[in-house]
Amino acid sequence: MVLALRYPLCFLLLLLLLLLPFSTTAQTYSNISLGSSLTAINNKNSSWPSESGEFAFGFQQVEGGFLLAIWFNKIPEKTIVWSANRNQLAPSGSKIQLTTDGRFVLDDPKGSQIWSADSAGARVSYAAMLDNGNFVLASNDSTNLWQSFDEPTDTILPTQTLYRGSKLVARFSEMNYSEGRFLFTLQADGNLVMYIIEDPTDSVPSNSSYRSSNTVGSGFQVIFNQSDYISLTADNRTILNQISNAASSREFYQRAILEYDGVFMQYVYPKDASSSTGKWPMAWTTSFLMPENIYMGIPVRAGTGGRACGFNSYCRLGDDQRPICQCPPGYSLLDPNSKMSGCKQDFVSQSCDEASQDTNRFDIQAMPNTDWPLSDYRHFQSVTEDWCRVACLDDCFCAVAIFRDGDCWKKRIPLSNGMTDPIVGGKALIKVRMANSTSQFEGGGPKNNDQSTSLGCVSELPPTLISSKQISVRPLKAERHKLHCCK
Ligand SMILES: *[C@@H]1O[C@H](CO)[C@@H](O)[C@H](O)[C@H]1NC(C)=O
Ligand SMILES: *[C@@H]1O[C@H](CO)[C@@H](O)[C@H](O)[C@H]1NC(C)=O
Ligand SMILES: *[C@@H]1O[C@H](CO)[C@@H](O)[C@H](O)[C@H]1NC(C)=O
Ligand SMILES: *[C@@H]1O[C@H](CO)[C@@H](O)[C@H](O)[C@H]1NC(C)=O
Ligand SMILES: *[C@@H]1O[C@H](CO)[C@@H](O)[C@H](O)[C@H]1NC(C)=O
Ligand SMILES: *[C@@H]1O[C@H](CO)[C@@H](O)[C@H](O)[C@H]1NC(C)=O
Ligand SMILES: *[C@@H]1O[C@H](CO)[C@@H](O)[C@H](O)[C@H]1NC(C)=O
Image (cartoon, rainbow, N blue to C red; front, side):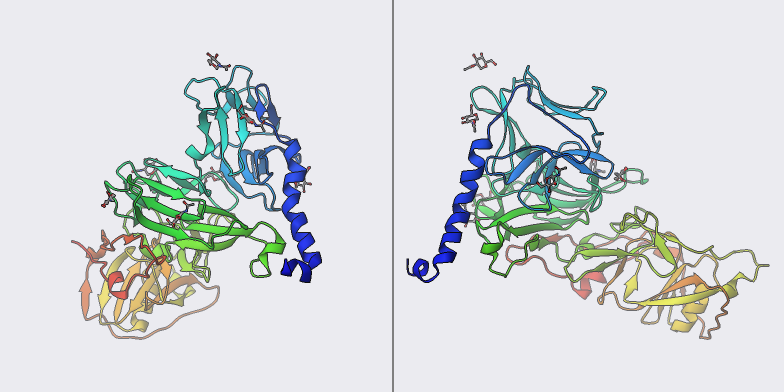
């Protein structure tokens, strides 16, 4: 009351804000009854909001069509937290319908079914968009027959639980909601694992994990509780792993998402500007992230895809701890709209025809602390950097040479597993075609010549564990050097 007397206007405003949501939205809400439908129409909002209006279910237009989705409805971003048809966007005119015979189906304008909710044959009696972001289909005795919380896409919300066998699959890119390349799953065996999904067209497709809780046999549920903690629990409810503890408050919207770049992130967003007290911007702010340096955790493997960043590109860790995929000098993105598509050479490769004087048309661009492990075909020891440069320039197969502590590795296209980080050390010498330049270098010859045995290397990097208090620990230099080669 003292506060109220000293700041009467503030108090009144606060009271008004507290009362507002209840007075305006309560009378507009009702359950979605049989026979209801929504149609996807360009530039028109068609949705069913939850009682509080905080979430809505309906169509959102994205590039390429419509998503049948659930989103945060009270913020300008309308952030999507679930979608039904991310791998098959709905064209304009598509319709989601709760049929009079109790089925929930999404049809395109020609009447072909794009998606349907599987209520295991039971008759749905009504649907409801709940205030926690869960969309449910219920029977006439109010039993949930189907709920969006049981079929997560890439996001979980407070009050949502992941069970054994549940998985989050990241979207393809920031704006493309199709299934992408990363997987966060509580496996049937109880282990909570994060995987990079290998390209199925690879000769030996296999998903490699970059994070594991090591809870085979004991992991039971991942719970995002009302206090905004995400925990991995055993079936006796003991907490095995405290995955995150966000800035807990009822004043924030919260979500946790497996981002398209493979990082599991928890975000908060102030519910209204007055409660943010200037400390929090009216935007999604990261409150938790795992793992901290994702591409150091992904095991390096030869012979398969270009790793997370794509062939010929390299990964750098941004200030926000998120990976950034970049192309080396002389290269550009394969798909300009997708940073993770990999890179292509912007110049014609060196000719191997001896008659052509092509060698003189190339130069080296050096990038410190950069490497593409395992793409090498020749290794020389006890050489100088200049010798390494010339060796690459003179070799029509060589695209990049790595020079580090007197070692010189020649690499050819496509380069894979690329990364730049102070712990890498040395430098990458990238061969690029120059219009009019001639390069001349001098140096000593190799004292030792290790033939091509470095092909077929394996990684001994241990998968990092999900630690309880810290987000993650950067791998030590010693661990990076555990990469070894096999004959
Ligand atoms: C929705 O339906 C359920 C079950 O019939 C009922 O308990 C609830 O009050 C209904 N809610 C609204 C807002 O009509
Ligand atoms: C859709 O809703 C948003 C916010 O609720 C509003 O800003 C926008 O103008 C609406 N668009 C249409 C076409 O009604
Ligand atoms: C999204 O990415 C997928 C996978 O590469 C692709 O097949 C699809 O066409 C993309 N969608 C859009 C709208 O660009
Ligand atoms: C609920 O549905 C079942 C069959 O779907 C029916 O047998 C039962 O009578 C219905 N109950 C009510 C209260 O309508
Ligand atoms: C990799 O994960 C994807 C997504 O869960 C799955 O479809 C695929 O079968 C897995 N591949 C292998 C080789 O395990
Ligand atoms: C609960 O289960 C975990 C893992 O199975 C076990 O380590 C722990 O001792 C159990 N705690 C209790 C109180 O039963
Ligand atoms: C949420 O989880 C945290 C830690 O696991 C626990 O301390 C807290 O009591 C839980 N809150 C609720 C509402 O379950």
